[in-house]
Length: 214
Image (cartoon, rainbow, N blue to C red):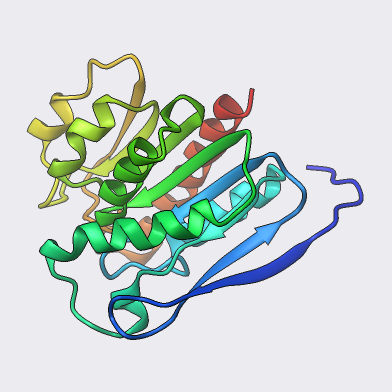
């Protein structure tokens, strides 16, 4: 993609956290009216391949980007499910601290799919938010039904079964992609095959952005 002159700024939203450590949410701005928010998984940070390349794709489409960090990740603590509401509240504070955007794109992985769905609902921005759900959890299904976008899962993911996929496969608001034999990280045993899968997924990213940014 050919890019004109872009004013780029990178800064960190530094906030206190319930876990006793500051969190640093990275905000990359290039003057866009669209904010892409990256929601990590439980032990899958924004620097891991699926989310790193999602952010790079967002950059190619000239979007602003917010890379979230969870408080328990900063503190190197174990996540407890009863702390989900705290993660949601802290991430919502980071998003709300930014200037208003005309459109949001939430790209989320695993537990992050729950956080993303809850925040879109809490901030009442569902109508201007597109979601890209990566390996969601079953508890995300009610939130997925209320949103629009795309979903990618692996057929060998122990946390998201074919039955779960079937519950949303007929929805017109969600496009579902199944990666054969892939696990919860959308990888397989072979390194080369995992890289080939990543290329397929990046192509899905491009299709998603072309559709979302109309």
